[in-house]
Amino acid sequence: MSLKRKFFSAAIAAGLVLGIGSTSFATNGYYMIGTGAKSLGMAGAVVANPQDASTIIQNPAGIAWLPSTMFDIGGAVFMPPRKMNGHKSDSNVFVVPAAGFAYNPMGCNCGTPHFVFGVGMYGVSGMGVDWDDSNLTNGSMLQKAYSNMQMMEMSIGGGYRVNDQLSIGFAPVFVYQALQMEFDFDVGNNPWGIPTGVHKESLDTASAYGVGFDVGLVYKVNDMWMVGLVYKSKRWMQKLDWNTRPDGFMFTSDEVKMRLDMPRQVALGINFRPIEPLRIEADVRWINYHDVMWEPDVSGMQMLAMTQNGPQPVKMDNWPFHWHNQWVYSLGVEYKATKKLTLRAGVNYARDQIDDDDLYMNIVSPGIVETHVSCGLTYSIAKNFDVSFAYVHAFEHDQTGDVPAPFQAAFGKDVEIKMHQDTIAAEISYVF
Image (cartoon, rainbow, N blue to C red; front, side, top):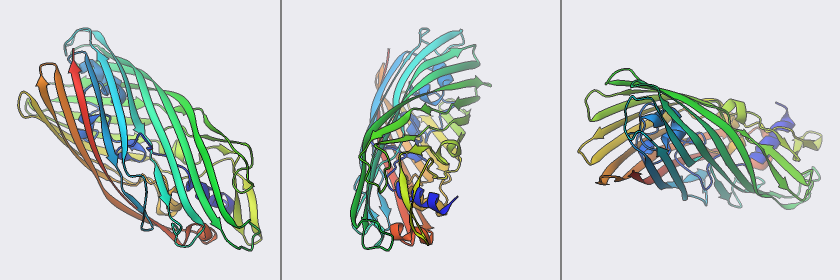
């Protein structure tokens, strides 16, 4: 990669959020580990173990194993304290709603061929950071970086129960995406001819829509073993489009555009029931971040690259974040302690997808946590009504990366980011 391109990507990265703004959750990269309190309590290990109507998001084939028509509604509070070079982010509490509905005309978990319809709307990914301090980068130019992205998915589809052992499912997916960002550079006297003072660069919220699809299957080997498999296609998004007033520092046009597609995924789950009240599931998931987060397309932007010959304005057509693909491993345990009470616990691990050398390009997309643990429960209040709760903790992950010499004027000699996460979720389910 050229020196000019690296400088541009590093500076712009200070304003991009590729994570959860108002749709925040415990994350693998920028994807939440589960949808709803029940799947969060299992640490996301539910590909072969249908929990509720949110199964339409996790694996549409699983919805054909739900015993009745049901409606789920809930929400969560997400708290991700973060520090950059010792400075705290000002945004640390987020709330996300979730809702799903499954219609089972048979009213049973039976092998008679039938179709179960499902619809769900959930916050699935994103991340928002608000770094704001006059000494944010230890005396370098960057003083503030704020960004907020929301990514919501709505699935409308369902699963077909072929027989007592097999179901297949398909669901078109509709995506809403919104991004806002601002970042400030304080430029003092310099030998490059850049105007002195604070350059406040901001883009108001822009929205984009996209489509994709999910296809999956669930196969019951016997009373002890079940297998689930799901393929989630790439989400093909419109370009985010902002109207701006070019100032010659960062924006070269009165229109700035950026495309942020969402990655494809493949997940396999194996569910084991050694005794009637106990379920144990192990899942492995592959997320194709490299395809969409290596060098996303941009237009209408530039950056002054610091070279030996002085500042060189360079128009950019891509944005190298250099995210790697991610493998996610999750293990969940579910135990029906009594007729009314079900207990859950889980662990989820995914190696950080950002190399140390690229950390300074991702200072406000720090989806760097690796290990989550979870617990949860469901309690049946009445025959057709139950409540669920979950708690998820992502252990603190500390990552430090050196900044190349040409970019130290903006970011300092190195960047250190610390982050941990806590999520509390609640859900109400009604069975018709």
